[in-house]
Length: 386
Image (cartoon, rainbow, N blue to C red; front, side):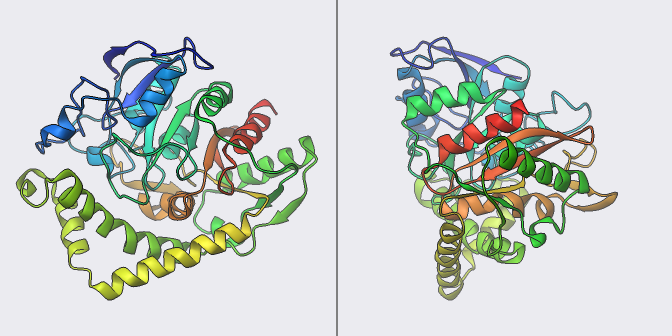
């Protein structure tokens, strides 16, 4: 549930009278910051004296802060259902809300706030948005800096926003100075490999969304041939993320390894493995990321790719790390992350939008080139209005 924190607007603008919930690792000046962890944060992080850049920007445009929302511990998880405070899905009983920005999604879904601030390192805004039947927007790289936000994996981390409708996100885009791409982008269907491990209803939702966008907007259509394979994306993300988290916790936050006794076992294991990576592996990860960025930028030049948001329904609270796809059980990250991490690897904007296909609600994701944030939100509006 939302923990109440009240901060008035510092200015007026497109977000006048909009209420905002803030993920609990995003700084609010004068309010203690929590990462939903027993690890003791240094005072410079635990007691911010100034708002994070995204909080300051929204308040300057008329928004008022009404509370904070729970995060998966240190934002390193996609369920917000681990040790510490947990978040259940407010629209699907007995299921997780998703993470790591699950508390922000919960508050927005319950009508406790109009807008939720989250962070997105591998889908952490888009996943809970999709599973709570909301719109989730991961920003283009550099639209708003990560200043004042507790880092998870520098270089992959991005701020983002969650809302019930696209209208309030378009107001936020106006406030933040987001831009659009050229007219008449080509709508790309997901390539076959992208649908290998996706629920059939999620694949049908993507096909229906492509049909709506091309017919309603009279836009050209093609198949996203040249999109990286799942294996390439997962391999690159694995090589890059772990060492970046070590840098964050050791050098930026300053809690690793001194506070290691308070970390959960799975994070200790991940950090230990990452520390053991040799320079050759690190170089390979950076080289692969540079290659995939070029590949994605070429593919998305004046194009928007339609993808599943997650590829599966939210897991149950009894088995939060298990995804069910067409009646079969899989590791959750194996199913979800291939759909989300391309945007983080390449620093691209992405928007997930709730979509119903054959009576089943599945999130559809729109991935666009750098600086196409407004276009993606406008296309998301078309899908929601269809």
